[in-house]
Image 1: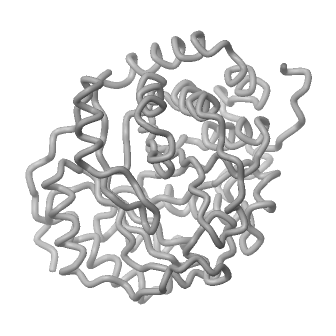
Image 2: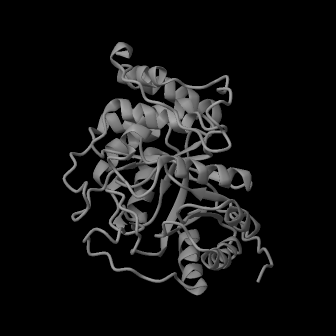
Image 3: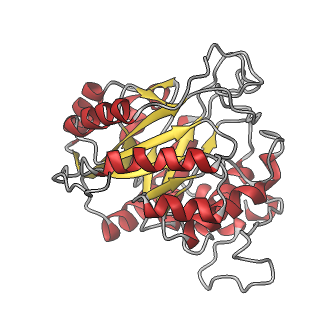
Length: 344
């Protein structure tokens, strides 16, 4: 109930200073908690109405995520098997070559993906890393795919360089509510995440930003995460929601899984509060199973990560996803024809 809600504060990027006026449509923690607490059928009905008003009802974006630089990250994010602080069996690898990335992107396109995302396990890339990533971005764009990257914290000049290379989206998740963040990671501040999002926005790159549920957070922390996302001005174009994959060796390995209906509720409230965003089912889909994913699509999810691996964790086979979409009468976006940039 709203009376039991504990205060959760909204943090702002540097471009949205705390003394700036709240957007007229700002969502309060109480409003979001009340949505999460609705009877399930009522919440689903509201989410479905919002979804159909803004998106084709049966369309699902297929995005593929490739780890182009794996392991060895100095951060201590409690969920991440790529942290150098945890013994998870992940071996650090160097940045992939343009030829390797092109082959992976071509395979993703042939399987039906329209967006190709590249992840690199850096805390913050160096300028020389940005130059190499620019080449990879152009490689992906030459295949006619939308490009996305997640590389860690960015400086404004680095974001501008990625934009110049043709980057369409930058992913930088908030993970959880500000009050719970220190329980998950201590090597960076929440404000640093927000400041990277501000740099991405200022460079003219679309924002991909979501979070993870099932990390031991309380319901009010889930409401706080959604509030942070929905009150970004503007809110993200893509909102990936992850169900924690509890990897042995990480501090969160023994976390109890989130109740499946609570996960669906998070998806539905993201759809209601961010009607124009692509809400993506990300990590943890293998554990959710087909029936829960079907409820998520009904709740307004309209994007999935497509392919047998998400960075270093498992994901449903593409053939299994195709079968599920067909069973539900859903379809992927049309694959665009290649439009070479002509850049070297």
